[in-house]
Amino acid sequence: MKIALLDSGIGLLAAAAAVRRLRPDADLVLSSDPDSMPWGPRTPEDVVERSVHLARAAARHRPDALVVACNTSSVNALPALRRELEPEVPVVGTVPAVKPAAAGGGPVAVWATPATTGSPYQRDLIARFAAGVEVTEVPCPGLADAVQWADEAGIDAAVGAAAALTPPDVRAVVLGCTHYELVADRIAAALRRPRTPAAAGDLALHGSAEAVAAQALRRIGAEPAPAADATGSLTVLLGGRPAQLPREALVYAEGRLLAAGDRTPVGGARPV
Image 1 (cartoon, one colour):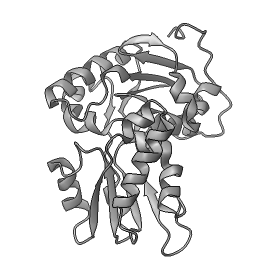
Image 2: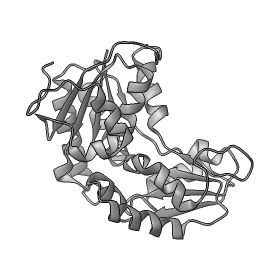
Image 3: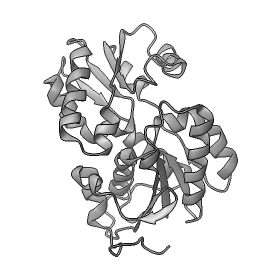
Image 4: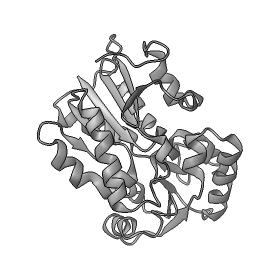
């Protein structure tokens, strides 16, 4: 079994680690292009072109499914990616977890990039899945880039600024960019509440990685097997070219989890 994941940068680590936890025996292909970040300010046509390029690079490794582990790419390029790959390769998109966050009744905050905040796409999600729930849209300028380059000071500044814009009575926060899931604990600490709700009044953070990973397995008819002994391979593509896992990825627990089973020789990618 082989699962490919696509993102502008290392935001795909969260979904890749979720797949690894569900199926340690799955081979993973990570296709990204951090030199082209950020994608949010780019035109939809540009995002489509870049997404298709990364998808084609991943498809050459013959995956059983492709996860679009990027909100911007999912919004702009999902139809094009499905035309390109399906039905041979199922394509699974990423949607901000507004629906489960609103299920608790709110108030809810949606943390997202400035380009996504207030966009018709996000407003439509809120209207469809959070009707009657108080929702605050919180722009997080610079946070995705700071996470991408493991800029500790930049992460602290961006998280602190977004936390200051988040109403103190929110019960749930939607992490509307896959990069944000890599610093979920720091976001929770900035909001000074537990990450997972254990009692009424606690605050929950809602990402998409676990749901996307589970959906990818369902699309190929695979069952979770977290106790599997085999460790799947890891192939890294940057801009379509074989590479190593970026050193910034190792700052995050998800990156270290993937690297633990990586047998890629230094200076190159593992052969397919």
